[in-house]
Amino acid sequence: MSIKGKPHSRLAFFLVGLLVLAGVCPAGAASGPGLHFESHLLDQAGLLPPSAAEELAALLAQFDKETGNQFLVAILPALPPGERIENYALQIGESAGAGEKGKDNGLLLLVCLEERLIRIEVGTGLEGQITDGRAGRVIRQILAPAFQERNYAGGLKEALLTMMGWVEPSFTPAMTVTASAEEEPDAVFLLALFIGLLILSSVYARWERRRWYKRGFSQRTGGPLLSPPVRRPLGSPSRPLPRRGGGSFRSGGFRGGGGGFRGGGASGGW
Amino acid sequence: MRNRNLFLALIVILFLIGSYTYYHNSFISSEEKIAACWAEIENNLQRRADLIPNLVATVQGYAGHEEKVYTEIAAARSRLLNAEGVVALGEASSALDNALGRLLMVVEAYPELKADERFAELQDELAGTENRLSIARLRYNEAVQAYNTRIRRLPGSIVAGMMGLETKVYFQSAAAAREVPKVEFK
Image (cartoon, rainbow over all chains, first blue to last red; front, side, top):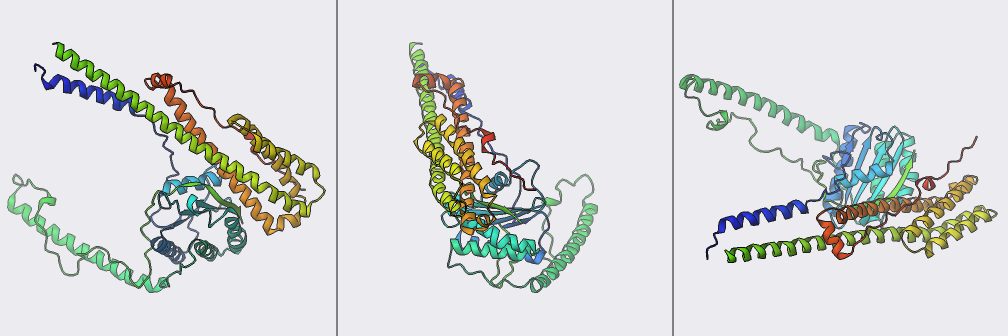
């Protein structure tokens, strides 16, 4: 055989490349509203007191962890101009990926303060348990009356518990530790972390300076990253942040499962 | 040298077969996606048609003498249920939207009806179906747009021509007709 591999493999590369190029088609990427859910509750309007927000987020996180249904709450100061709450809620729910892919068991409760609008966007998989009529009832009978009395946290909690009961009747919310009891160890821990870092940095700086003098300028090739590990002074943190125990759920850590929505749910106002 | 030409020819043929298969299959997937989106539209149209008798019955309980609106809705509903094809369904759907809008206008005049929880829930169901329908329509039209673009762009259009594919029709319902008329009370 006189054929050498080289030109042909080049040709093959070219053809494959052509095929790939031809195959690339612009995927209709829906640009989401760009809301980032760090926990299951996003209060951009600052409507809820921190302790209540923490409690609600913990409730949502527990429900997610125990039943796999991802309920999200978003409180926004206002809707983007010209946007309908139905469309916006759908976009938020989809971009956050609430619910498991395939099961589509997500839910988004969206509150827009300026417009005084509420939308419960129900994932496709939960439409049987939370029908549009039921979602509307939650808004009319629980959320609207509570919001009119400015009892935002209480209304949200009752609404969420009602809907959780429809989806998973056996679900029982964990006794959440009161906020004041939780805050104290946190403050102490943060203080210790701060002091520890302070000591660490001063020790490191001194050690670095000594090394600098010893070696001289010309020999200094490795950066501080390549330097040998510093002996930690006592009291400095060596472990990652401990989880708060006591059966309560940390609010942190929402990860969307890619659940789908198709516009089920209800809207209302207060 | 002959061997070499033969080899080249073989590669070109393989490439052509490969591209044909690729485009053929991708068009089939696009068509299936459109079919799925269309099924979703039909589901929601059906769901809405099923809800309407309940809604009308509830409204009649409070407002018995608004016969004109009820017959209008019944006519629009049966027209929708008998409509075939994307265009006809779109038109029938708009007509039903109009009739429903008039029904909801009637409702405004009956405060006890508006306070009825059963009616409120039916209205939520109806609104939810309308919302699902508008999203299904959006997704269907997006799928159609993607498909139409794909089968008309080179080099896929050659394959599409060989397969005899034609562009698909968008599902439209006049946007103005969908707006529920606002009633102002002074």
